[in-house]
Length: 449
Ligand SMILES: *[C@@H]1O[C@H](CO)[C@@H](O)[C@H](O)[C@H]1NC(C)=O
Ligand SMILES: *[C@@H]1O[C@H](CO)[C@@H](O)[C@H](O)[C@H]1NC(C)=O
Ligand SMILES: *[C@@H]1O[C@H](CO)[C@@H](O)[C@H](O)[C@H]1NC(C)=O
Image (cartoon, rainbow, N blue to C red; front, side, top):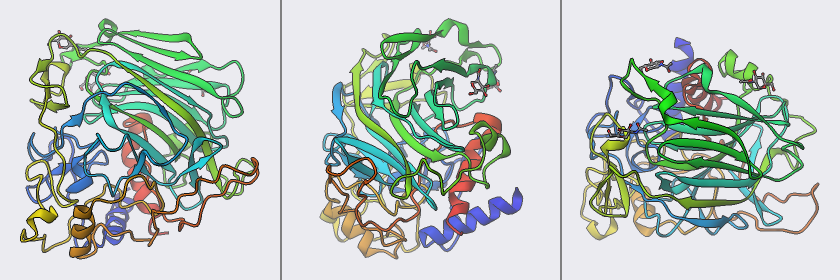
């Protein structure tokens, strides 16, 4: 394990053009001032590290991370990539884009495919807006096969989490789960049986999340219910109940990589077969038709000083330490952070650029990826102006995702992007023996293969 972690650090360095390994962050260890933001992967950086997934508890200060853009109700049809932006392009302006991607989303038949080809770690789609209570539904199908996991989850920046997960060897059950601040609890998982399979039938999976109750639905049928009052944890003195603003995440990821923890591989049904009959056009895929969001009111005790974003006022990161503010943070470049949001903006062209490389995109930049809006000129020039950190290591271009809706099921056209190592986030942090770390190691380890 020690050796593995060391390799991962080197891999990270290689991937980002880094001379020294990034600082890591987590319980008892905060990020340093020059790379203040703690990513969901537990590594420090700037830019995208300070946006979705930036953990205020382990960042340099409570000012390091962005303030999560507030809930936006709507019916988000994923029939094109116009509303999807690759994570290395997004600078925090959720008014312009609703989804961020890492990996390779592909449009087929008016739906979005989360793809996972050999040598990649799948695809992650995350909302730019956060939900602080609401009903969130996804009409989707799952992938199939050993080691292949499809997920539809809600996850907060402090790792409160609500899950639907689908392991590719069991296409008749969704696994429901929840976590509080990333703490593993093996009791929280429950199987929800689907009448017909999850692969060839589109089902509507819904999470109905209120301050006091949490319900999981499949096709309008309530299959599981959780009460906040049943989650009291006397040790921590709080309810182990998801209670902080959370992003919507849809992903397809390789739990069955040989480099992953044994428990994770077993849970997922074994190691992935990269010559599987379930792959088409060279990849596994899951399909998302649309996501609907109905925002509920924030809890009555919420500190309301505005309406645009959520901000943590205390490291306790419980529901009563989240403030609703009008202070949105939009980064001037991928070298900025919440502490200095304008850093590297083109309007300040005399601003000095970092003289050493700093990580700007957690997990590295996706090799393929969403197109969405054009990269802002600020980000483009900041990237170009520096030493190559932030540049796509695979040379994968992001401007030719294919919108070809023709053809039949056997003939997805995936465009001509380089199939670089994408990066998808494992949803179940802390699951099965602390596999969050294992997955990060897997993700990074994969890059040296
Ligand atoms: C859910 O079903 C899988 C088999 O598909 C099984 O391995 C797992 O233990 C079940 N989980 C629960 C909580 O019953
Ligand atoms: C209660 O909280 C403590 C501290 O976070 C944690 O270690 C423990 O696992 C929790 N208990 C349960 C049953 O989840
Ligand atoms: C939210 O905060 C209030 C006030 O501290 C507390 O009474 C309530 O139990 C909290 N809710 C959860 C889900 O922890």
